[in-house]
Image (cartoon, rainbow, N blue to C red; front, side, top):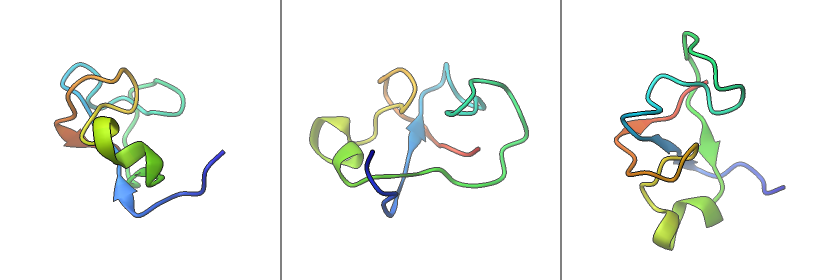
Length: 60
């Protein structure tokens, strides 16, 4: 497991509003930070849940 990074994860239109940890639709309050490896190269701006094109910031 990698340490939390400085980049904020992204969600696609389909997964927007979903908690990336438990997949429930809750009131998100805290930005989900992802490691540098998950926010670089081919993974940049991708949805952290399904891998689609990320459009909004992940919160949990």
